[in-house]
Amino acid sequence: MIKLIIFDLDGTLVNAYPAVARSVNYTLKVLGLPPRSDQEIKRSVGEGDRQLMVKFVGEKLADRALAIYRPNHAKVLKEKGTVRFLPGVKGVLGFLKSKGYKIAIASNRPNKFTRIILNVLGALDLFNSVLCADRASKPKPHPDMLWAITKRLGFDQAQALYVGDMTIDVRCAHAAGIRMVAVHTGSSSKKELKSLKPWRIISKMTQLKAIMSSFPVCGEG
Image (tube, rainbow, N blue to C red):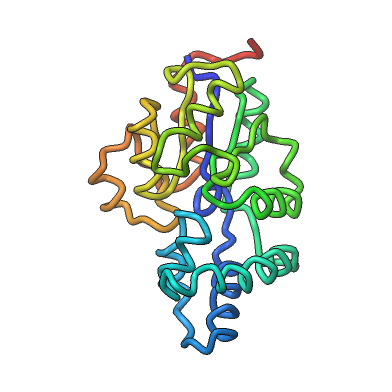
């Protein structure tokens, strides 16, 4: 019986790509580097903000770039309209809570930015656990975050389901021994996700309701 559903954040639950793109291009401008397209930036997220900087400015400038990026990004995330739930997500989260499932987030974003996003959306209290890469022993695709969340909430891997939008999420779930539903609403294409053989692939979050209906009712236990 599935009792815990762990979600990735960006591209799975929320669309914060416009905020990321603005902050990346602001950083590049300050450093005197040319801007990058929104699509290129979107395809580069998922491994944490330092790796994001490395992709665009290189290893030598990464720390300097982060010192520019992070304060700007904290400000941009709080601006109206820069972050929103993806279609159907809020209803699905409410549905899962009403059925007694525990829900959690495992994100490679720094904890500070994840909590800004959830606060802006008024969603922080929905989650039983939120764990980010800077608070975990290793980031995704290592399984450590998923293992830590299941342990923290008192479940084993067979009782958990992980939902994410990137190939890095599929690899993480496989490494953790946890069923994985891949939703192609984010950075990775359906073809890329399918090549790694997740347990299920969906095109929109509302389809998760039908998947969960195939399991016994969780209840509050």
